[in-house]
Image (cartoon, rainbow, N blue to C red):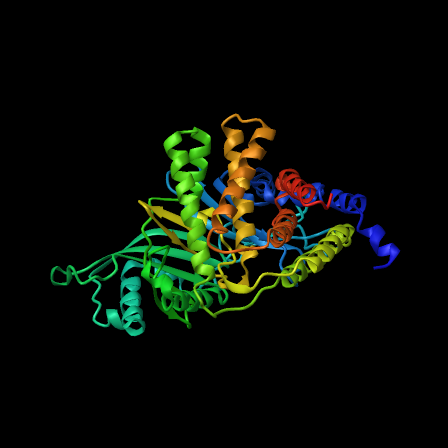
Length: 482
């Protein structure tokens, strides 16, 4: 390495680069603030100016800087109503945040607000808006949310894909829950009913349908099918949902239920906020079982999915920075000293073997029911070092623990120490079942935390920058980079 490169990798150079990532311009934050968007609409939509309509609720939905897009795109969900009248309707608006230096549309509203064809540009927010038509990215959504259409779809698909349910007859289908991210994915939970003669057949009472704009549903189905062909299918250590069917034309995954009383995240928050000895003991037991379950998944012998290396993750971080540098050129080299330093450390720490990997493993993905645990959300299932799953889980557990302890009145130093102890206990529990490089975990966590900092920019969440940067800097000091 040249002397110039070494100078670029000093702690001072790393710290200076991170400082440049800490402060977002005011124009970027405004489109993420519902009150400012509402005020902008009330200046440019005649129906709101005159009071003929009113915005009763406005929520920001997934503003993102995507690859190849000219600015940040996303949606707003509005509940509109007529002044003095009860009831209302929900309208989705497509949005684009236009960065400085990019061509701006005319600041003229066209069409009737909230109706198909309406569009406007709010120059104070650099925000282009238009009414969103029916979600073209999720063509299955209308059928999945209509109980009768869903009943027919589920019966037909499960019969065809799962031999043990070849004579399935669904008498009723009730939509129990719906989670929807416009343009991305939706999850529908159904409670199924059967005729009197079909009681005790072992057919599922709960079915979960997931539909995606991309290929994640197919990946999740194939990954769960591979896990169900492994020793994990017994459920002795951890439960994984039964894959029931995948409909490629509609991009719909159907899966069976996992018993849930609460998530590990819920337990972690509750135990640390209350300090209750029984809850803390339950948390220790659940964390130990989660470590055993994760080790069982890693050593299940499943050979399925894309392999992701630390170098792949590093390249992804650089791609995100390159994407940000188009509208925000001042960020182009901000993280490069840190990335070079991490790259050098990674070259000195040999990676662990590539194993089956959840790749999005966090306390929210662990379901608790009595003495049993289950893992969910295998959208990104593939192969990687164990350090990927371990770093993401420990990083999130620490953050949740710190927040809960602060809410309980524990001072920062004490909260950090106790949150670190939670992570350490989990890693020690995992190491009772399998060996893993602690240095590799630290390096994966560094990239994960830097990614979260970048997400504050790409997802227009600048209010989260100070706390997220604090976590990154603290981790870098812990591993000797700062």
